[in-house]
Image (cartoon, rainbow, N blue to C red; front, side):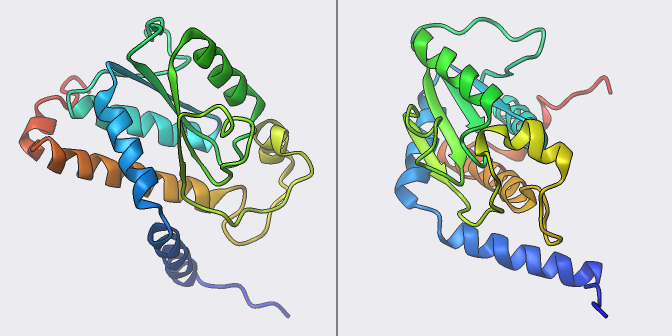
Length: 201
């Protein structure tokens, strides 16, 4: 009979996997990503499903830094301009239809595309100006382009870290680490962030 791992075991296993993924990050890719963020007039972020939640958390932290950040799809998100604006897309497969189509639209307007993914050679990766690969071991699926729309709903996954969990969790850790790196680069203090934190919650 199969013996289930304890929650503690799963936490340790996931953290060890994320550590491996962190150690495999490309310095050049990370540096390029930070430069894109700091060089942008406005930063638009997006992702589907849980990756979308990571994107929203990243946008919030960028706002706390004093940068102009918006979540694509929100009612108060302004129109993109043809220059100076970038899109940061979180997509493990780099093929999710809704995100790919939005990236292609942003590219046609003249915006720059930054992709956080596990597949550089993907539909979005091919048009991106900056790609950060943070994970390369994902469950195989029949059609990567329908990863969010079908895979998340049908449950094609393994028991350990199902449905892209490692990518999403690593993306969250990565995005928070980027915020910390930018804070050091622009000499921003935590007190500066607190001053922009929501105060009408």
